[in-house]
Image (cartoon, rainbow, N blue to C red; front, side, top):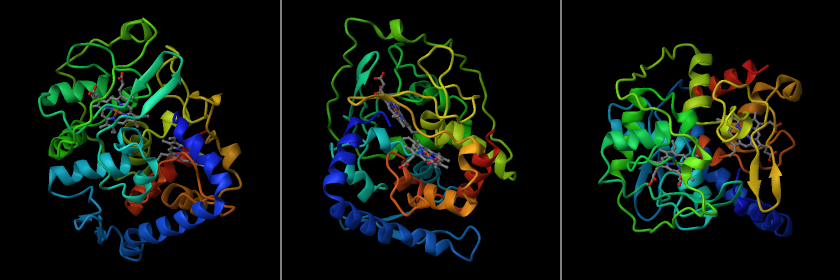
Length: 322
Ligand code: HEC
Ligand code: HEC
């Protein structure tokens, strides 16, 4: 990810490997509850998980009748929005409680070629209309008409279905407001539109839900428009700023950090020929690599609560890459 904190984390991890192993062990015991609960029974509703702080938070069900719960699945599990919008400044807290960590933002995306952009507070959108929230997520346009900047992957969320968008908005509205003033972006004297063009908005555009009985259709939808796997594993669009939603996952999106620019792995089949589907599943779902090492940077802590069928769908998508 574009997140220099994580480099710090890698550094710390190297120094304090023991601590990390304990953390991973704690995480695994924490996260094994929902997956075990699903074993054997196809699509069983996951058992409630202790959310800490006295509250009990169930793993959200993507097929719930409750739109807020469906939104929680999209934001907290499949979408991993907390990966960037987490509040409180301590990324380890995201690992510890991905379902409850507040989404009040504040993380600084420094070292981007366009300057420093801060992750906004998603708990205080109460004054925005649904359409304004949708325009931000789908088109990267703020209520004042200004362009949002990457790494917010609006270009990928652009294809989210109307139903899922409504659920995401309902969930964001349900969040308890957390006060956290977010600094203005620092763009070196440039305005946002110097960096990226705002698309023409079509309020009539419709995004019907797809037929998800085919795992590859579901997997491609999730990987592109919800989980945004392409923000890390994809390629840049022609504008040189946003991610190309159509391009295969060849690992060509530059990630900017204080360690310089680099890329994440390609998911081309030639790179994955040694991996079994089970190993890919363990990586996505548990954050463990075939050699037993923990995965860095990938939001597996969120994907850990994916339903089995969504993990299978994502594997079908990975296997469909050239
Ligand atoms: C890779 C990091 C990243 C991810 C993942 C991400 N965002 Fe963002 N988001 C940002 C950044 C950074 C901005 C602000 C960009 C700017 O200031 O131009 C932003 C802006 C927004 C805004 C506009 C809010 C405001 O006050 O301007 C909304 C709404 C939003 N994101 C919702 C979401 C949702 C919902 C998800 C998950 C489905 C998500 N984001 C995932 C980084 C991310
Ligand atoms: C925030 C960036 C990020 C996102 C989002 C992300 N990944 Fe990854 N992924 C990585 C990184 C980094 C690695 C290598 C991790 C390591 O080696 O520790 C990786 C590794 C992988 C691998 C193993 C390939 C290899 O050679 O190591 C697969 C398969 C994979 N990701 C699939 C996915 C899928 C499917 C999604 C979406 C559901 C996804 N990733 C979302 C960053 C990301």
